Length: 357
Image 1 (cartoon, rainbow, N blue to C red):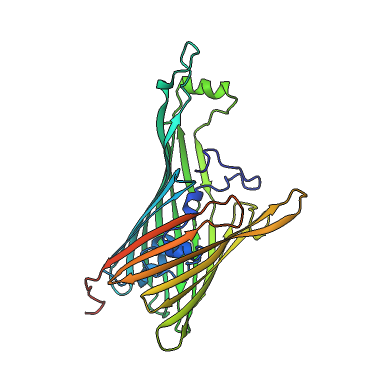
Image 2 (image 1 turned 120 degrees about the vertical axis):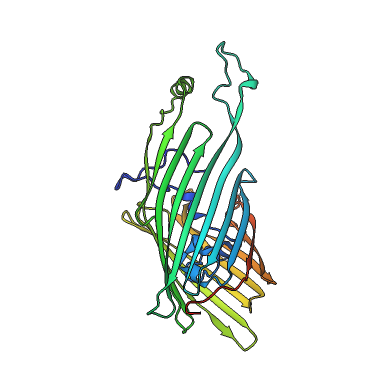
């Protein structure tokens, strides 16, 4: 969970890493690819990765589910996606996300008025972040292989009864997939910036606890999520005549909220590349691998070294049901955490009437 008071960016006075839970990713397919899926996404998860990709959904209705746990099960991350193909040129989608920590002990009232510890005064609360995205995509009639889309998102963040925030933003994306086998994609997340309005509800006793413990009493305010641009390219290469293919993809995320610990960094923007490759046999079996999360770490002698996070995965499709698995968060540090992620996707192929029929 990100803290309620985000780190301030000195150059813009906007909080850095705001709404960062929205950058985790959805679907074990993408996580196995190191989150390199902006150009090649073609299913219900496009509502999150690139809404323009919803135009490739052929099912009348398509659903996706994912559950994963972080930090030894302390934090839980859930996703559900729905997509509907309106006709052969347009589609809509809905995405819901939750990243939360449940049953957190509230010890602010542990000491009673007489100065004694009373464990019966401990209560539990939940800190959770929610996001809801409503997406629409449409093909460009005059340019074959090109589509565009957008998502309107609502963000709700809550820390028990102490604090809550509501935010609103817009994502816009495009895809271009000519017959050459190359696929290109781009998405601007938080294109208009996303504004989170925080409201804190601290009674007098809790405010006294903040003062006694040397903490600053939070005030109601506005948190701004700056735009993030992701550029992507993918190449699908058919091997032989037996339906075997290999499809590498590279994405580069450009952030505008100041210097980050990424492969390319500056005070104005930072670039974070990710790369993935998918090897498949028709639409039945796919093996995946990817690298992401490039960071510079320091040794004791102040020298730096570059680390990255490898990811692997596999997907199996049978009778319209796809089961994807990813083994991710397996960085090369000795104390790194890792996660087994499983997602399920299925659709209803009820035929729809095409334009002109």
